[in-house]
Image (cartoon, rainbow, N blue to C red; front, side, top):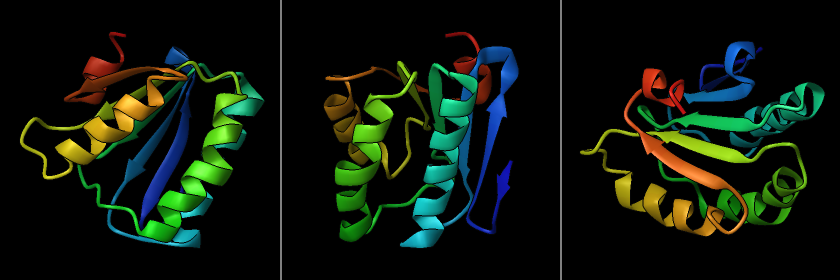
Length: 123
């Protein structure tokens, strides 16, 4: 498990998924290291699902968004991950941003937006 003041990342064996739970806003290595660790868990466990809990989410910096597009996403696309789930409330201020990301990710993954981890376990 990866644990910092910004994020927790763990492998959920019962559903073969990696859970990335953001706690508060961060950038640079504080943002990238949890995602790198999550990708490592995906590869070690042949996990098929990535779950991001955006309940305490935040908008990424332009630099981190660029890193996500050029460094992280290509590695995720070539991994065992087939489904990406965002935990997001309907009234979240991030709703539009997450929907935009979802539409882009749908080219490579099955993407779902749910309101709780319990709902993610049903997929």
